[in-house]
Length: 118
Length: 112
Image 1: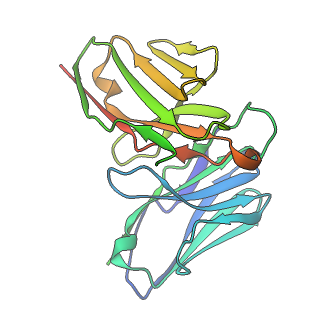
Image 2: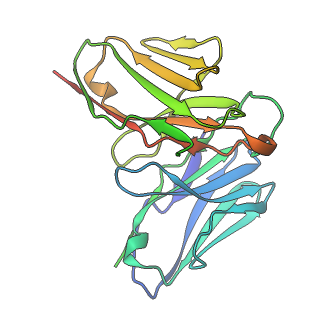
């Protein structure tokens, strides 16, 4: 099973709403990532969790709040977003974010949540 | 300078053609290399890992040149279904980080 599951697939929210994106993997991966992808651009890293602890925040505005309740789950809480935050939000996981050796270091991606802020 | 660079294309080729993409990376400490395929409005999916010895999977061949810091992807006998964006991904570097770093992607259009 190399599946990363994201919900919801689509989300439309107003600028005053609070919503959450969810991500789940059961591959035993200890690193999980949130990426943001705008049209015709590559994914941009937002956050990295390693062993359930936030290890990297790529200067993401505080209206995005990540949470890792356990090793299989990753959430992204959204509040007071702007229309320019509309994008595809991708969750990914890999065995580790820091590891000796080069085997099994690939990342697996969820299908993404297509977010529209109105 | 971007860490991972790719020619965005598009590469517009007829069915049956052979097409090659290159990707260069700037961090000489990089350790793992991958090609991902992304269809329009879908998530990236792992196409293949790239090893120093090179590797082949059917019509796809990937190679790594550490001395020149580039990786390549060769697609033989292109199919219409190969039309997609191909993302070069590099991991590894300072402190052994394996966080994926993406190139901007190369767009391939295969036409009849």
